[in-house]
Amino acid sequence: MKLSQNFLEALLYEYESETLDFKRDQYPFEGATNEEKSELLKDILAFANAWRRANAYILIGVEEVQGRCTSVLGIRHHLDDAKLQQFVNSKTQRPIYFSYMATKLDEYDIGVISIPKQERPLYLTKNFGRLEKETVYVRRGSSTDVASPDEIVKMGQTDALDNENLPLLHVEFFDTRHLKPLGDSIQIETTNLVLPEREEIPNYGDIHIPIGNNSYQIFHSQGTYKNYYRDFASYLKDRFAYSRVDFQVNNEGNVSAKDVNIEIIVKGSNKSIFFCDIRDISEEPPSIFTPFMSPSLNVKNIDPDIWVDCSQDEWIIKAELGKIQPKASTHTFNGLYVGSENPTEMSLDAKIFADNLPSPKNFNLKIELKPEIKRLSVDELMQLIENAFPQNNNDNNV
Image (tube, rainbow, N blue to C red; front, side, top):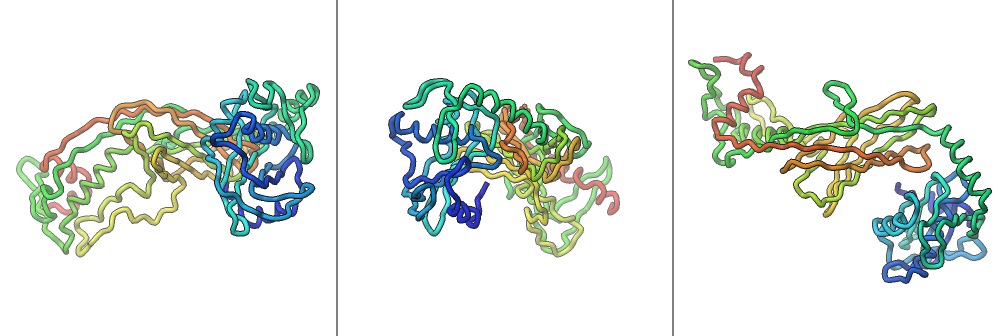
């Protein structure tokens, strides 16, 4: 979640508390000793266990005196969020939800660690540096303390009561064509077309396409759209290679879920798997009977509700579903498109966020991909194109 400049500036006027801490210098991390890194680990644990109703923030690169900000100094380097997540959550009895964000304030680079309210208590499973295992560190005001046994019991009791006033969300796959949920495990069958070379595909208007035993359809060139068959072949390649799936989120609780989002991160260890959203799927070319057309593929006046981005080593899939009423369901409409070069099974770790959830909920979704390869000759390709618009042929038989 990106924090606005106005929000960060407002934090500078607050005192350190169970929801705020200022750090002048960056935490020692890369190349640091366990004792040095335990300072960072302790602060995150303490804020996660704190008694609070709002998110907690650690602003790094801000000088403070007596618990108040005096100036923004900035920092020279940032922590890597992925490495930080792995470091912290490899040592606790269950994952801690937090994030590290690099941002600017007063033109200085600062780091912000955001820690949402979440289920407690949280503690280490083994001693680390100066920290002891199975000890519940808790933030009190501007300092850190060790929780008493009675306090630890109350943490669980209080969090259980809070959960009764939260939405209860569950995500699954959804079939928008038949309007039915598909559960958390699906099979996807696709066809990877191997097309003739582009120059082997004839210009529009140059061929007769058979439509029966003793008849054929004659297409005459209208306008300058010579690449219709080539563009239609690219469109078919996309449509066959990808299978569409949507997501449904069910709210089984008694409270509305506000601004619901799904985030899925797929590490790129399997390079044969590919994802895209509707923006990257080729559009069907306009009718060949429309004269003087020079169509531009992939131009869509669509506001998608699923986005796919690909970095060097991972796929990032995000979906927006808005508000979900109690005992109701909402699904996406624009589709996630999935394909693969080889048969494979994959597990998707999904997170659901909502404005009134203290921490994201984790779910696991499974996809079995079963692609086949089909090589097409020019004649087979043209017959496939013929079969793709029978309504036009029926209306325009010669």
